[in-house]
Amino acid sequence: MPVKEFFESFLPLVVGDFAKKGTAIEIVLDDGAGWAFTDPRALQQVLLNIITNAADAVAGRTAPKVSLHVRQSDGMVRIRVQDNGCGIPEEKMNDIFKPFFTTKQHGTGLGLVIVKKMLARMKGTIAIRSRKDEGTTVEIAIPSGTPEPG
View 1 (cartoon, rainbow, N blue to C red):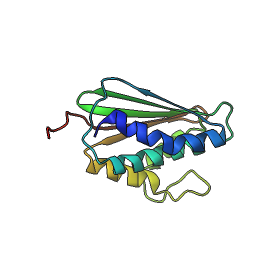
View 2 (view 1 turned 30 degrees about the horizontal axis):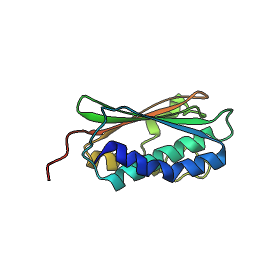
View 3 (view 1 turned 120 degrees about the vertical axis):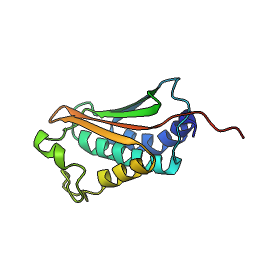
């Protein structure tokens, strides 16, 4: 899957909602992030979940912002989603991938569980760093490569 084309079709799905909520969204796409071995629909679901979490976390914050940075390194396409939201308390970080655990008033506690499973099927990974009242950074990595001729 060509990474640039993926984001060109993905971003219009979220930009309008962010604008309505007054949340800035920015993307930095490094030139080296050319091709990823992944199912575009699955990656879209993963990113929608992560970005929705970020949008929820920045609601009500001063100058709410979500940024995406896409780069390639060590044979992986790395997508970092960063927000300046409410963050996750340190004592809850060990529970965020447990089914039915949520810090949201109306969450199901299944979003990150599903994200992690979908990424595992793509031979990808997810890492989350967060500081209460400062924001959260989610980094996913999926295998990169070159398109097969044909």
